[in-house]
Image (cartoon, rainbow, N blue to C red):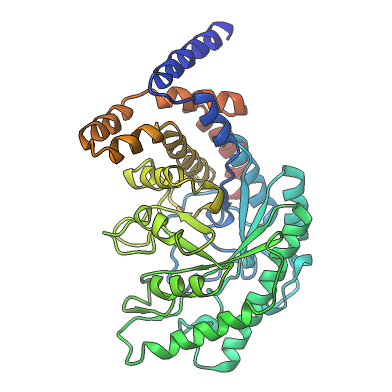
Length: 424
């Protein structure tokens, strides 16, 4: 073991020298990476089922495909699975909860009547593990969302129900932020849209704007809760029209100071990328929420892999010095593979891509560009691709006390045999 440790340190020393020759301080990069908290999404662990109506069907354009054994059936199992994932991911990270993960003691509680007491066990768990909490109203998989409309619904009574639900969620988020000493990002996404082309595109958007204004009317200290709104291009059942388009929410966030705009990597046309939107959006809004996902031909929410786009997103955050203004969350749900592994692989890839961005000689790249020396800029960018960033990543994992390389899978396989298998 000592020999292996010595070899690893020697490899890191050599890699550090390679980067130092380009003016990059790997220690500074590792220090900055260790401060970044991803928000893991609870819904990967149970295929977006929640605990309100176990076995109920998903709606709102959401579909989790696959039947890999061992999904969490209750909150205790979900928290156990999350605990393992957090032990395998370097750093200290957050959890993103949806309202349908309330624990009501078997009692029927309508969504517009949810309160902090229904998430007390989640809060206790977060305190014990040092996790911040983020939150989301659940405006889908409910009888009052059956026709595909919620906050933009033409029926005032239906609309009011969802307004009250979102208001309740803001209060729950503020409770989390106060109790944990870190602000909760409460993100509003609704599926409202039409399968076929509507005759009136304006009216649903007017109603959505009015609903959001009612929801956000009460000021809440941003030290406890930050409000975000999330756009989408289309979904199952809303292929032709979505009321909450990117343009709608961009305009809303810009015109309502303090409102965060959420960019989801799977919520745009397949030829669009959110990496190109980050700097544009942050010229006009104070903070940004990212839902890092991987769409494949549509918003299919695949596990995040180390793609060019993932790297480009993280490069934008570092090159623009936007990390302090951006909340990074994951958003995917794959029921075809081990769910704990999905969290672990996705989160480690997001952090890997961020480390690669932190290891860029940004000042030198900008100097080349400013001087019009695009030849040198291209040469340096290509040279960086071959540098030993993976050795720096391994050092980060060792320092954070998590498995290096594929060793994390051994722990997941053991957990699968000892815990997940019994849920079949």
